[in-house]
Length: 250
Image (cartoon, rainbow, N blue to C red; front, side):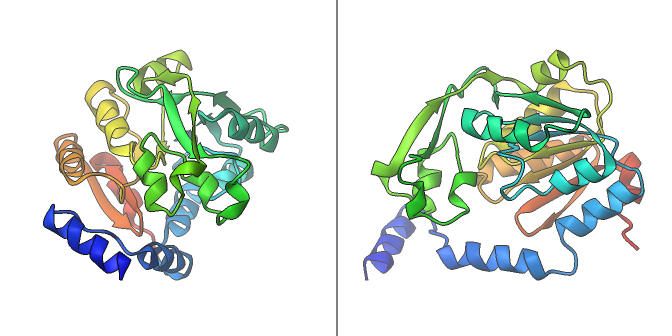
C-alpha cells in the first residue's frame, strides 16, 4: 500500500518510480541474452580492435567488472580510474603482476563539481546485497533508490580531475576504448570528452541512470560527432562511423 501511494505521489510531479524488479530482470536478462556486452567485447578484443583503453569507475577490479578478464588475457594497455580509496587499493592488488596497467585514484568531473561521493558505511554493508559496493555515486538518491537506508550512507572526500586533464596527465595520444560506469555521471563525462578531445575511441557507458535532458544532449552530441550507437541492457555502445565495420559480429 505504501509503495502504491508513493508511486501515485511521484506521478503527480511527473516522475516514475522504477520497480526494483526491473533491475533484477535487467541483470538476469543480461546474463542470458544472446547479444550481450561480453559477446561484443570478446569480438573486439579477439579481432585486435582494442589495444588501449581507459576504464572510469573500475571499482576493485572484480565486482561487476566487465573488462578484467580481457585486460589480463590480451595484456591491453589500460588506465584504470577509481576514486574510492578502499576500492583503489584492492584494484591495484588485483593487477599487481600486470605491467600494462596505469592507475588513477580520482573522480572524473567537470570543473571540480564532484569533491565527495556517497557510499554505504562499511560497517553496515553486510546488511545489503553484493551489488551495493558497486553503486557508489555523486548522487545520494541513487543509493536510496537501490534500497539503502539514509542512516547507512556516508560520504568520502575524493580527488577530482576532468576527463581531458586525465588524458593529458597520462599522455594518452591513442585510445581504442573509453569505458564508463559512474552511476549517473556518465553522460556528463562523455559530453565533456566529445567536446574537448580529438580522440575517436569506441565508447561504452551505462545510460539508464541519466536524466532525460542529459540523455538527449548526449545522443545529439554523439550524432554531431559522427558516432553510431545502440543499447544493450543498461549500456550504450558507441562506434565512430569510421569504425562502424566493427559492429559486424558475425
